[in-house]
Length: 332
Image (cartoon, rainbow, N blue to C red):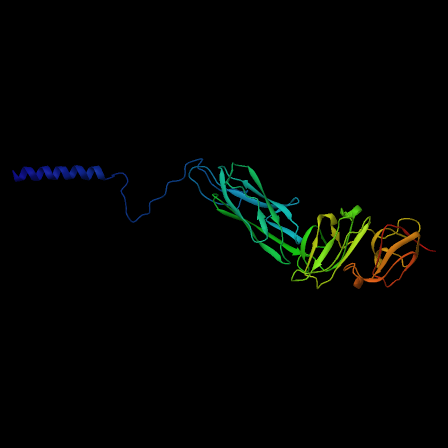
């Protein structure tokens, strides 16, 4: 009985040994096993149009290209240059799906001073589709604003950036509103007119204030004036101008006050240094005039001399001249 059982076990072990062995290719555990070669036509995920790199097994690639576009200048950075405080300049970010699968742009963020017009929902881009997103630069102070526009998506690289830079500078012109001197606008002489600045002299009245909000100067309405002028000293804290004044500019509205072959002075406020030829002027009927030492206000402190006459002499040292409702002609 024992002999029979031993023979059966031996036979069984022999059978197992034959089933697990490979008589034609014996295996040596000390030799490395070669990896199988990739099948013909297997996908290689390298995109020459993008910085993204990745290996996929499904044959699809999620890659993205992001460029800045400012007035047709396309590149990896946007330089807005110098922008007046209180104004806005815009550029475009071009986001392109450069792979073979759709991508989802989940967010676009911008540094201080910049605004991104990103929709509430995520942006889904199909292959070769481009989405343009507006980037606006609106400086609030006399600073340089720089940083990166950051575009996040489910592309292989995940995040892309476009460098942005710009500088806020003081305005050389201003319109309706309240403006802080030295921050929003520079001190100096400003001009406005109906013909060039959209002003209504019958309603234009500008005021200057100190730091505690007390009015310390300004120019009132001047019926029928072709031009109005305001001097804004450095000690003024703020200036408030209504829409009726149009746009105030440090560039004179008129190159001169001459409107004919003979120098003339028409109704309004005029800069002697840049717009009026000093000399004696006459008018047919008595007319109101002021020789000005500045245009901080129409108070006596800014007036050298006032009068109502048919003749007046504008001195070379005068800062300005104001007249109502009449035309003065230079006497030869």
